[in-house]
Length: 451
Image 1 (cartoon, rainbow, N blue to C red):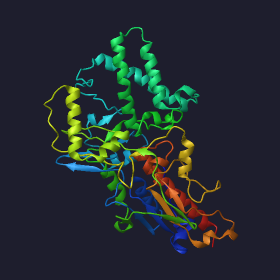
Image 2: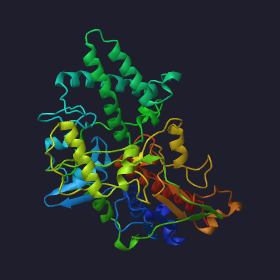
Image 3: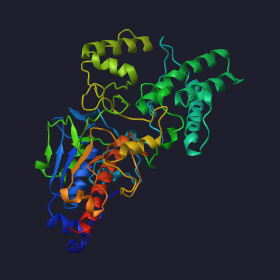
Image 4: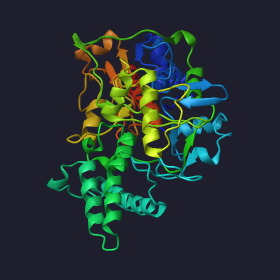
C-alpha cells in the first residue's frame, strides 16, 4: 500500500516548514470516488489545508452505490474486495469490522464465478433442455485450461500469432473449438452441445472484463492485470461503508457536491476531459431476489428501456429457457445505468486490442510532464477522467531563473490509471494515494530549494 510518511520533527521537515511559512498551495480534487477521497485524505494528513473536492453528483462514492431495501443491501456498483493480502480496501474493511458478518457464501477463492457453487446448479438450452452436469463440468475444465493459456502471453512473453488477431476472444474461441473437435471420446451430439456453450462463457468473460465483446480485449496484455492473493469478499452492510470510512478523515466543508467540472485550464491551455473506453456492467448482491449481469451493447440497449420493458423481456427469457410459462413478472426492478450516466459513461476499464500497459502509463502522466519529473514510489498506473487532481502551484515556483523543474499542475488518478490493478477498488484507492504522494514530494522539493 502506498502511503506518505510525515516527519517526526516538523521543524526539520521542508514540507511542513514550507506550508507554514510560505502559504498553502491550492489543490482541487475533481471527483469524490475512492481515488479522489484517498488523495484528499492523504494531502490533509500531510498538512495541506487548502484542499477542495468537487463532486458532480449529489453524493460521494463514485461507482460505489449501495442500496438498502428492507434488511438486504444491494450493490449497483463495486461489489467485491478482490484479494486480501496487502489489499488496502480489505484491511480498511477488516479493521473496522465490516467483514465480521460475512458468510462463506459471500467469499470466493480463485476466479469469481457467475455460476452456482452451492446447491443445485441448472444449465439450460434456449429450449428448456437441461444440459447434463458432467458435460458442463467437462466443458468448464476445458475452458479454464484455455483461459490459463491467455495469461501466458504477457506473463511469459509468448509471441501472439496473427490468427488470434491479438484478441482474447478470437484466441479462446478457436482454441476451445479445436480441442472439442479433436476429442475422440465425445459423440457428435456432445460436441455440438459443447460448441454451443462457448459463446455463453465468452459472454460471461466479457462481463468480467466490462467490454462490449471479449474479442475487443487485448491478448498480449491480458495477463498484466495482477490478482492479489486471498479470497474475494462482499461487505454485508454495503461497499458504501468503505467510502464513508475514507470520508471520515475529511472535513465536511472540503467536499462540495453538485459541482460538475466542465473544463480544466492549465498553463494557458484548456483541456476537456473525455471518458475512457470502458463498458457497462451491472452488479449483483445476495438476498431473496433474482439477480443477473448484462454487458456490452445489450447493456446500453437495456438502459434505454423502461422498467416495464426490462421486466417483460427478462420474464420471457426465463420462461423460454426453463420451459415454464407460469414464471411471474418481477414486482420490482433495480438496475444500474453506468453507461448512460453522463459523469461515468461506463463501469470500469480494460485493455483494448491495440493497447498495452504503456498506454496506461501515458494516461497517468501529470501535466506538464517531463522525463525528469519525480514520480511517487510504488507501482505506476492509468487514469479515469472523472478523478482529476488539479493543483495550482505558487507563482514563484514557476520562476525559470531558479532552474527548477516546472511543477505539475494537473494530475490523474482512478482505477483506469493503475497498470496492475485496473478495474478494482484497490487500484482506485492506490492511484489517489499515488498522485497525492507526487504533490507532497514536489512541494517538499520546492520548499527545500528555499525562497
